[in-house]
Image (cartoon, rainbow, N blue to C red; front, side, top):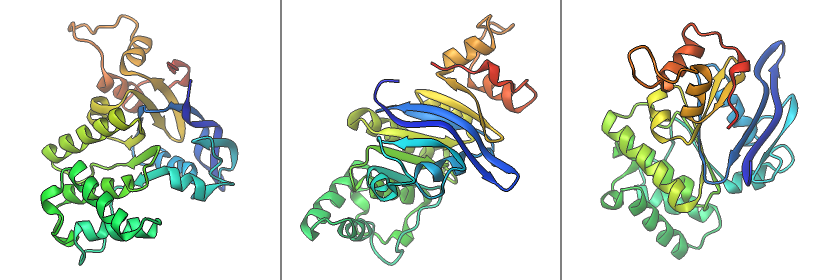
Length: 263
């Protein structure tokens, strides 16, 4: 893939006899929104830890923004923003002060930190909540503040690990729209790890199906559906989609990696 931002080759992580990630080969292009879709325990979080340089692979290699997370973990963290499922803040500080504090820790002057924090709070839809203490924020507001925190350092890549957990449908929809807008307008590469197939289908350019540590298929929804279901439409006349693909791999399908699409 041209201008790949994330590249793995036969990436494997073992814990004793247990293989958490098994020979993962993957490329994610610059500015792409890629969905890593799989059930809990599939190896998605372990993959993220290796991408971030927070755990070493047992074998294989990985490059993020051209850097080796094993040898250059600090440089990778400077270019990659990570948003976990549960974001932590100082609850007794305002949302704005939380961002200013983080910005100053990252080397910005107090004036620059204040300006950048204000800009980002507006960017994520929290312009009216700058003085409210973070402890009073709703779950959705905390996720938006977390995204602003991630953006402080102008990341080239954002990694989202189950970012909509606990959000209501409206909050989920707004958050996902924000992610897509940021990727399109600022050219940020997004890795979106989730087990919610409908959310992945809404926002991702391509999807990787991850089961028991193995990447069984990858591609856009159309290419995956066409390869798995050559007739392209079901008996009812509807087009096959991600729900059918999900069922194929997770709920009684063959799970054969030979079906993989590589577009």
